[in-house]
Image (cartoon, rainbow, N blue to C red; front, side, top):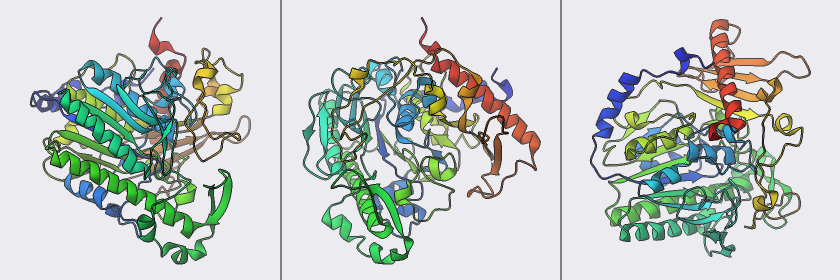
Length: 507
């Protein structure tokens, strides 16, 4: 059972907070969701990065709502993207890691808003199943009217599929290409007099890295500056295989990609301003997980992509919506990508899906009503070997899960990505394994599996308000806090595993 004291909101207070929102002006806002690929929390100018130049994101952070404690729903990309679309933890529907698809039965924000009259478009990285026409989890099947998308990440001159058609090369810097397609979609939506949802998922700055000469030139000093920092492994643009290269050279290319992405966002903002759309358009930028090993330079946060420590899951988060957020604000409230669907449903007066959600509406935060989050956030990097050890039945025909859009990085010797998702009709105790977290307003509880059969789990407790670097484990000092948080975490896992069986889909 989920413990009511930890999970049940003070409903009447919450409704009072929502009242101004529900009585807002009749016109519903346009919505643009932007996401960088592998863009870590510390990799912005506004967080005083020593090298990076992100003038557009800096301006957004200075004029909008800056979310200093914003989290990706998972320490890797596909699961986080699923949490954006569904408002649910990705383990509920078997999107455990990159290469795992959504399930067709999931309800997305695009489906909900499309039914409410929104034009819905997806642009860039999808990575929740193939984007080809016959895929049951392509953007069109999941609610988007129009899409120009890639199965995975992409570099300069990206090969993209338009509405499920064969991939075609789009000449240019990839972030600029994606934004140009987005602008064309917005123009069509305006002609049709529809509000729009544009989901823009950049291929940058995911490795392998590349950049335009003018962007690379901004960071020409980095190879020498970081000559003593050794080498990192990443994909070769020439062979698609792993190579070792000096960190300074790699950062020069990575930061060029981030700067190009930043500039493309500026192009979009300029367009919105020129067309007098800025005031009534909500623009929400975030990353999908923490900085990868190939991009780690210096951060006050612990660890990196792939871990449940802060460096793996805390990401940049900025919201601009001048009509609703007219003055710049900085929020220290915990928020997560699973909150995006409930928030958008609230501000568009769209009913929520009738199934377990893991996010909450952040709409009260826009008006200064939300300081302490009323519901905890949970993270879980599942033990995939345990969950797939008995070769479970595929949820989707494997042929329909074969990707078509090429990419540089080889996987299993092929330059495309295939996907998978499985049935899990029976749940056993060991299925709860994997690194998992309960994040409260002050404390963060981390539970790791013990090493070896019968070994005790490793428990860590951090006071993030005093120790954002997660340096001091307080578990031994605060056993009562650990006990309560571990109990709530295990209750939540049982709820997730019930969803994993397909129980939420009825029938």
